[in-house]
Image (cartoon, rainbow, N blue to C red; front, side, top):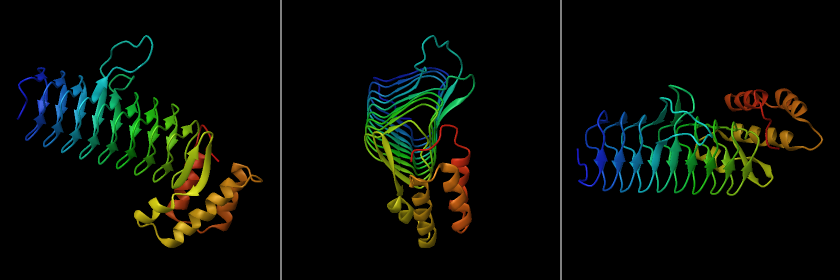
Length: 256
């Protein structure tokens, strides 16, 4: 277990095999770091944090801090991070505001420099958040979504899987899966064509999604009318079914 002599590792930590801890790190109590994970210099991991296998955590990252809630009283709660996730310089991730619950970062996630993940967020596998993205509390970002730099995400927002959010976008409503959204105020530009192709979604389904987002974007249709047209005029597929379910269960409404 290569731990630099200038780093502090508290008792009650669990450090796996082939873990590297660079200079001037602080590892608090009840931290678990699984095999093969590498910490750069000046990383702070406060108590009640679990990190999976083969993660890479760069200089200045801080994980496991208390939620930024006025009057918050200390309780046992967690940050949990999956396997093969990369966390770049000065990322901050806060633990849950709820007793014995977790802020969760999935596997294969890439959080670029200065990303902030607030308390109780749930970040799915293979999500990419680019530089200086601000993710407020209780946000759900589903797998393989991409968030552009300097985007701001309001609390309790859902971002659907394989969605693409452009840089400097301000999200105040849910982002449908497979969609491309950008701007302030945000505008729905249709399907995430590049993401769908890269993830080997069939050409026929990509075409159906393009048609579905045209219905959703039409100014002469409200959301219920757009959903009815999708159900009646577009062949059923797993992707179309999921898109419909996501919109029908949205509590905040979707960006159109």
